[in-house]
Length: 152
Length: 209
Image (cartoon, rainbow over all chains, first blue to last red; front, top):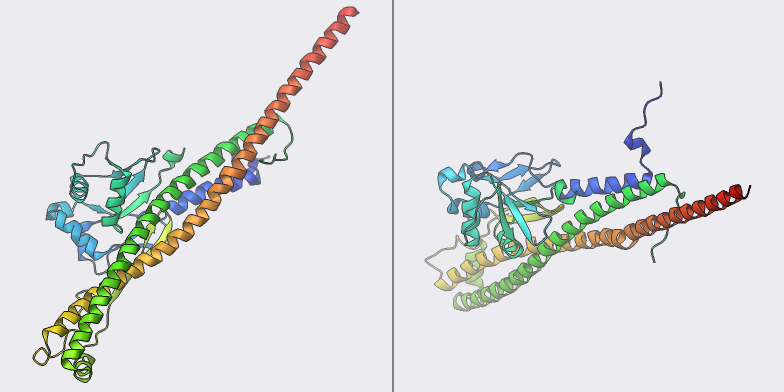
């Protein structure tokens, strides 16, 4: 009995190339995301603080940055801060959002940027100049996320 | 002028082309987002590299002056004798980070760096202490500059690669698809008009009997 034609089979080489390009770009930009985020308190005790990324590579954290983060938070909050912090880029190019799970991220962002930061729908929205400032302070403890729904 | 893609003028091809166009536009969107982030990071790294370079030059000129003064005070032979026993191995932790798909290195000096400490404090002056302190600061500045310089190069290379992809999509792939879709649409409209004219003609001929 003949098999029904599938989408993959029907695609032309041109479409396949574009599809691969899209997949490749998404894979490349999100390769640096951690498989499972680590808590600040755990990272502080590691000799070489790092997290394993989606592509199997390691993401290195600078000790000086971790110590700076630790200086902003108390011990309980250090146990609640997952690293690296994820910066999601919105469809609107003027702003970005930091994905936050608890109050620790809010406190870090508000202290680092020296302004009140509020978490809405698990996101802290910041503008591009603030993003540049944040990246300058937390170069290894923040990573960018490109969400497929943004590009859809 | 974008080139027409050679396709058979059928409705199925038109649907396929439309699908390709929407896919190409999605790829373009993500590549553009990535390019904008890379550019932002690049500009920031460029500014920081410039600052780090200036800082390093300042530190080195201060260090050179301090060592000259110390050498003048103690004499070259005595200074060399003191410093020969102070050599220590420096430990630098190196790792990789990721900025929008670019693997960038990061370096960090491990522990307290005391490259010139260990000399006899009784036989030496505070000039040498000052030189030792400045040498520590210079070392930190060198490591910082090394990291920024490499990041600068890697980001620049990735930006030029991404720009080529964006330009190819923006000026060749997408316009080519749009032109072909327009061409096919016009061709179908023309075919419809021809069909209508033909039917009218047939109707007249039938009516005449």
